[in-house]
Length: 143
Image 1 (cartoon, rainbow, N blue to C red):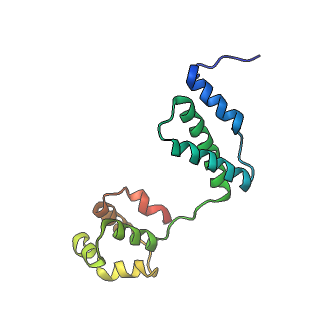
Image 2: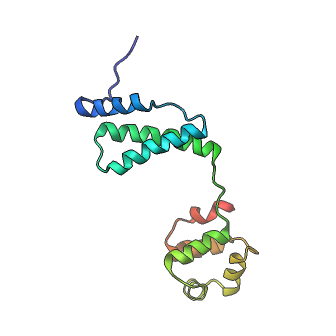
Image 3: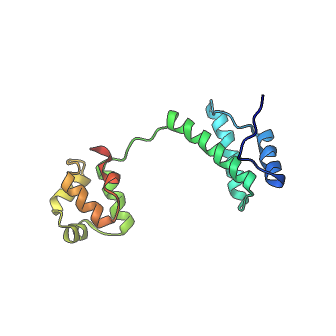
């Protein structure tokens, strides 16, 4: 026996959601081909611009299904400390010398991290997090 959910779509929003489900049913992504088709559907919706509630609800659900598949089959390795530092320097537009001078981290330490010879220390993580105004957890993922 079916029960009525408290959440629901009505009118035009319900129609747009059901139309999308009929064209591309919401189900677990099981293959690369299925993933490709799901991404095409998402791209079409995103290119549309403003979406009604039904389209938004459908896009959210499909995005969740794609994320589960990608997390399982296309997991990304965490960035190395060198890659992370390189990215932060580039994003802020500062040099190693500026970082050293403004953060109090020795230039040699910065160079060793960038060369992959030395990982972040806890003290360096705190200084970098303060300098770049980011949470320490972003830099501590490889500890």
